[in-house]
Image (cartoon, rainbow, N blue to C red; front, side, top):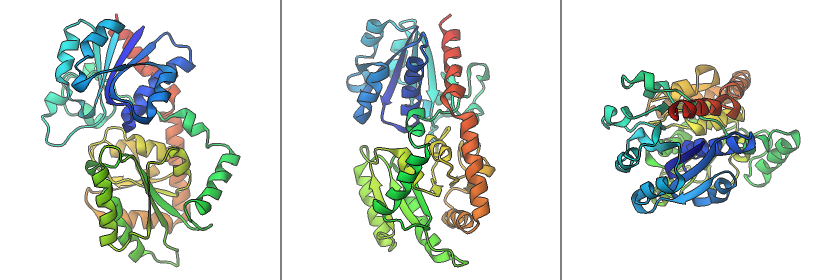
Length: 360
């Protein structure tokens, strides 16, 4: 069976992991699904995708989409669109008679909800599921982590190397905690709120607990000006020298392994892949109680506060740093949840079942 994935950018967070993960899973496990990917840009993931799928260029605004459908002759066209918005060109694809499924990876505030989700077959959050009435056509499927990248850092030797890297490359002395974030650098993901939290944490640390190191990393290829603004904000708040701006980190699980707490204020999320990856490394997540974050990060695995509550974020970070027992308990719960819910073997068979149903 041929599956043609249509996506705006195969370098984009949860979209990337969903598409690449499905392609990888089918290839590694000898599934009868053959995956193709139609995209505008592939970025640095080009080689990874070519290992498991056939890539096709969409052209400007997917002008070649229908011709690629005719070339590949897929059994399923699987759309991966930010916000779940049914794109204009999808109507042309639908006219070819190929069965369509669509992922809603996030929901944009202020958009017309029915317009975003009416055409959806697959969602990745109960938050999105509850926004409209076509429930018989919706299937809630969480994101799966990149098992290849994750497994590389699970041995004791790998963890020892990460501990050495903390001090050598990040300048974090032994015994100092580290609070960090890695993910796309965009305004709607509230990255500036991470920076605004830092001075609150530094001012309010008590009980003789030393202040942590702060590390900020993420992809800046889409919004380099926003990344520059973030460093300006840090300087204005007099914390520019307290935050290590690492930006485009190649090995995200290595970076996560150097942290103790994952500070990730965000909004408009479905199942948040950045939070899931952090939890897979045993990191409690401090985030906003917004969109699908409560279902991604249950109370036993982190701390959630109201959107915009910077002091609440700081208090949550401090409570974890000053209570080693609570930090350890939430760390264990976070990791165990991902091992049960977000491994490829728990996720991708659900997609394959839907493919089978839609192709009948």
